[in-house]
Length: 534
Image (cartoon, rainbow, N blue to C red; front, side, top):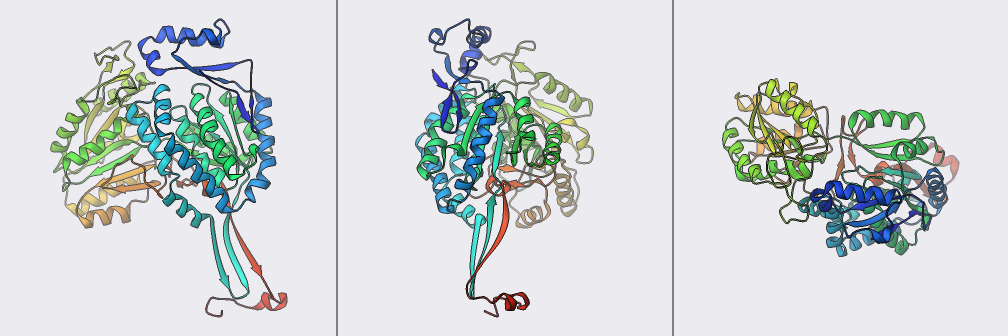
């Protein structure tokens, strides 16, 4: 069993309270027994040495004193770490990359143990590696500092660390989103992470095995990173009220997140919001329908409980029937299973009642259920009462104009339900304009994608779509790529000021610097300097 205290200023701080993690497959095969073991351990009725092998780790539960110690340590680390050369801080990112690559299989297995289906775990791990690779580091080096020499002056435009950044990762992807903090550290900030009580193990383990060694290799002060497993409401309130905190990276639902962002501003903190996504994938009539169906099936990774999967497909009417047929073939092959299984893709659905409400709404508004619609047990057999899985579901919605009335189209659906909106049969130019307008009027704005071969269609789409932090053409909707952002967006996804999220940029601020030699101040005041003059 792994055992971690709160990690504060380079020290493991124990507690008399612990959060235990039971292997997800044990929870699925013996839910009541696993819950009983977890409860007995956490309430002291069962000693840790008596725990069964299904218990894979425990993390100390910190309190307000621990959070305060982490923040005070972070404040002390900022002057040293922020002053470190950019090359040093990027060397830290390179060390994270190398460690993540060497521990790739271990990270995948840890995610699986926490309940991520194998395909989802491998996807998340690939994102960590792409987000810290050499191409991304080279791009970020250009963004973080630019130097020019003009005559007797060296002119520098640089990003300067905001200070102490606090990160609150989401319960559905704690480990991967904790590693977004790598780039906040690379900007010269100190980082304090709250590990959720429901899923703390991956956060603490990745901190000990990847982040801490990489920071040590770069010579960062140990106080630059702290991780505390703590209660959400109390910790977020403490961050808001603390004079030590500069930025808060917050993950959550849009309504709650936008309100929290307003609180951050009211308390003088910069909010970096990662909220809901309602991604659109558009399919034109000249594509390979097999490839397009494969892309749309990405909607069911983790049972759709990921913000960056396709949430809505908009399909050219000429190809709609053929595409839906191929999509249904793929979807019906997706079955429940234990997360360790090689083909595992689905996760238990947390809000089955919400799924049923949204599906009912779609049907009442004229949508057709093409496949799915039932709750399933682990064995794939329909179980309308106790099933913790949901059958991957595709519904057909005809016409763009009324599509936004359907909740499954209008709102983020955090379950395996994909609405396929068949666009109106109108002239091509009018159709492209209406589809682009449909994408732009989405209240959310995380990712959008297009499948098309016609160069004019691609050009019109890329020129016209302003919504979202990432736009992909003829590519995996969820796949990670070097240089491009992994997170961030507009509207209800990023809140006011939302955009593609490069954490090194979002947790720093621009500063211009001039270093001159031999300049007479009086002359400099009145001289107009340009590159041509030099």
